[in-house]
Length: 126
Image 1: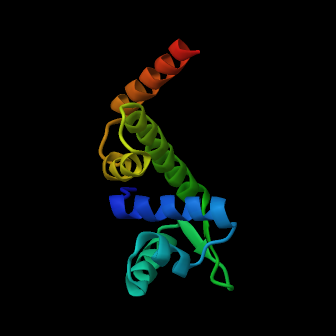
Image 2: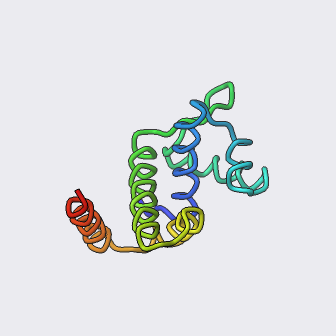
């Protein structure tokens, strides 16, 4: 299944909100991403239809196993890139914003090299 960048952003946001708040509703996603309620509603319907989330009777949104895998992968990339940019001297807020823009586009090979580089850098400073 091909997952588009916007779907990855929604799944990542659901994961972050679950970690922060324990439960997630559409309005939480609206507030986090700044999208309109109808846009989020349409996206949630598509994610549900693709088996990436479930929506309980109380409107709580949870990630399915496959949705969680995608969200963790994207969020892991986000955190890794943010760390790289901060180590390069970028302010944390800007680093996080930039990481969000590129986390979807880098190859796995590049992400692996960044991970190795940061690991070497960290072991050298210890």
